[in-house]
Length: 270
Image 1 (cartoon, one colour):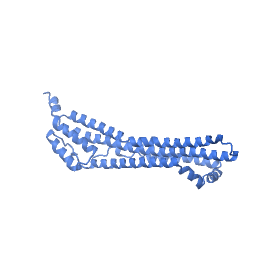
Image 2: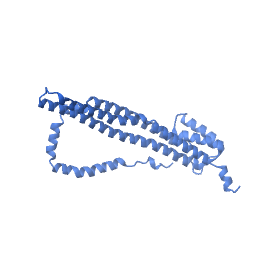
Image 3: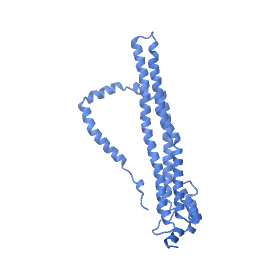
């Protein structure tokens, strides 16, 4: 069996490396020409361990980490399930020999073979084949089988989309939690405006600390959200390609091999 086009790597990582080389080759020399050494020293002086601790370990940041790890674990389990589902393509569920035909009387034995080979484990591809063969055994019509396979593919796609709800909620919740920290920091900064006992130096220092809390929460949340959305895109694309490849497999090894008595009668002019 030839490898479907969707199985072949899109070389996106190679293009990413090429983009990094192009952008880095243009920006790094410019950065060095504009005082890069002084800038590095300033950054080292500014980002002390204490500052990094406040940036990364606030209460809102910890909640963002929790939501991110939860979503990442869900996506990892879904991706592993896609890899398990793809094992069905190599199980020989249907005859792949050149010129092989599937007759109506072959539908039931082939359906039992699919159940035996898969051990009744849930496979999207096996379910499409089983439903298609069941319809073919009853109607003996290839267009009816094609309709069943197409409808089942839509059902599987809808199921995959609907079960991604928790991940989509967490992807929304992470920046929302960051904005909660932002509001808390801003409220703390402006809330001290009425405290007249504080001298101006202490007031400025505390207000600056509160503003750092506000912007730190937003920064961490947005960075985590960017990474999570990329992981969501990878998982969703893998699931979509699984359904598409299952349809392609059924088209090549099931639908195009079906013997349709009604089509034969029409072709013979009877």
